[in-house]
Length: 362
Image (cartoon, rainbow, N blue to C red; front, top):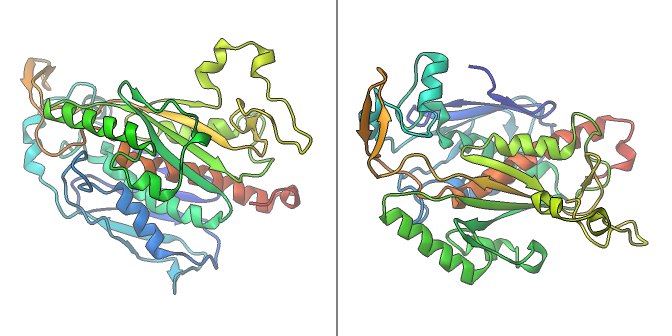
């Protein structure tokens, strides 16, 4: 299996399965001498870990990261950073009923057809548990870019949405983290939580959207052709489990406007009066906030009877078992932020090495 490496100068390779002994990774290319806040790394992992509230999977994992190399006295040494997160609460018997069958809309089918074998326990490598490694790497990437701020929040669950623009919301850490669903609007948050609980009680799942904002990114990040900043962000977001869509700036709404209404007119200080461009023009950051929205589908494993096929192509009925998220959105917030950080840190390192570095200060 290929495709387990992300990044160019700051590269991370991840390994491990949902019900294996551990997950982990190696970060290659991290500069030496970076002082790391280890508590902040664990904080990000705690935001992603299962069992943190009644509206997420009740699998109990501490998700404590152990660093094996590349860090000495809380500073990076410039050598590869190796790390592992041990699994503690696997219940593999919950998946015996799908050993010879496929869950509808799950990667069970495509994995087995591609590789001729699959780890049916929790989805194996296709499990969203793999993203725990991305959060470790992303947290380190965030700490390299001290001035850049990445903020995400749940903006919709099913048909319940925040109708305010992000700059009209309280996006402080406290405001977002005080909500179990990580929605900064208290009234909408309550409605979302109620919706998720109702769907969970019905044995079903539900999707929604996450909005991400990147602040303090200077002008000049990104390349104008194949390595456009928004293209790299889109690729990163679409690599996250259950993601079905990505739009930045005005997105699909912009298709309803004429050019005279969509153009962002300049202020005298080179900022713009509006920001329908989403902080990116021609694939390059323009100094304004970058913002984008990611669509997550409902989790494929549901606790309702569904018709499916077995390995022999026979129709059978299955019902999901085990512990699953009725909605992935609350736990996906740190994953979205980590993938954004991994995209940006590559550009940051390119800027440091290029002849344009004197113009770009991250």
